[in-house]
Image 1: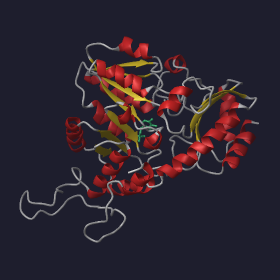
Image 2: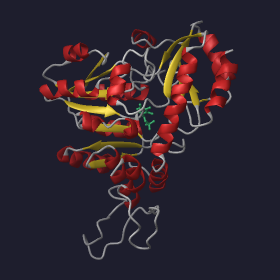
Image 3: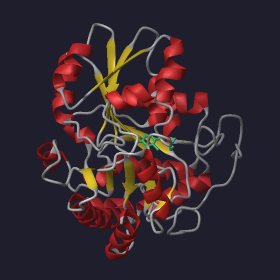
Length: 379
Ligand SMILES: *Cc1c(COP(=O)(O)O)cnc(C)c1O
C-alpha cells in the first residue's frame, strides 16, 4: 500500500458490530466477561481499547513498523522508552533537542542511574567519542529542535549497530510522510502525535513504533504497567487527523519553502535555518533521507537582540505566538524562553541557540497572507 492509501485505510476496518465506516469511540473502562477469563480479548481499558488498537495499527503501518503503541503524551512515550534501560546504562543524544526530552533525561532518569551525553550529532566523531561499554541507546532527533539541523540517520544507526547499541528517532518534526527511520536502520521511532500526526492542535498524545517483537512486548507491558494511555476520544481524533497527513504535509512543505526563501532574502534577517535551503549545512543529507522538507524553520535577525525579536513576535497576526507546532495554523515561538527554557542558558548558547532565535511552524494558510504578515512584522 502506498502512503496516501495507508493514512486512510491501514488498520482500519468497518466496525464488526454495526458496519460503521469510521472507527467508533469505545468510551468504556471495562468489558463484560462470559465467565472468568472468557472474553472477547478486551478486559480493562488501560490494557486494551479497540479505538486505540486501530490507531496503533495505523501508525505502525505509516512508519513501516510491525508494532505501534500510543501514550498519553509524547513525553509519556519517551518515559516508556527510558524504562527499557537500567541503572548504569548510558544514552547519547543531540545537544539540540526538544526541551522536554532534555528535562526528562536530566531531571528524572539521571536520578535512576542512567547517564546522558549530549553531542553535536551532525558530527559522527562526537558520537563515537561518547560511546563506551555502557552505551545502550542513541537518541536521535532530526530535524533537531529548534535549529533544524539534520542528523544522518543511516550513518548513525550503522555506527550504533557495530557496537550493539539501540537507536531511537524522534520523528515528530518530519513525520513518516517525510522520512521513515525504521527503513534507515533505526530500532524505534518515537512521536509526539500532538504535532503533525494529529495536526489540528487539539490533542496531546505520543507513540512508539518498532519492528522488534521482544521490545514490543516489553513496551506493551510498560504501557499497561505504568498506565499513561491516551483516551479513546483522543485516539479517534488522531485517527481522523492522520487521514489528511499526506495532504497537510505537502501543503506545509510548499508554504515552508516559500517562506524560507522569502526570509533568506530579507535584508533584516541574519540566518534562516531550513533544510530545504541550499545554504543549509546538511542540505545534501536532508535531500537523501527526507522526501520533503516540511514547514519547520527558525531564523535570527541581524539586530540580535531579545527586544527586536519580541517586537516581531508581538506584531505577527497570523502566526500565533504559542508553544507547539505541526497544526494547520501557523505558529511562532521563542525557544529560549518557551520550549527550551528548561535548558541552562550557557548550554543553549554552546549549542548555537541564540536568545533572539524565532521558530516558525508554517501552517497551511495561503502563503501570500503568511508572507505579508511576516513583512509587516519584520518591517
Ligand atoms: C512536543 C514534542 C515532544 C513532546 O511531546 P508531548 O506530546 O508534548 O509530550 C517530543 N519531541 C518533540 C520533537 C516535540 O516537538
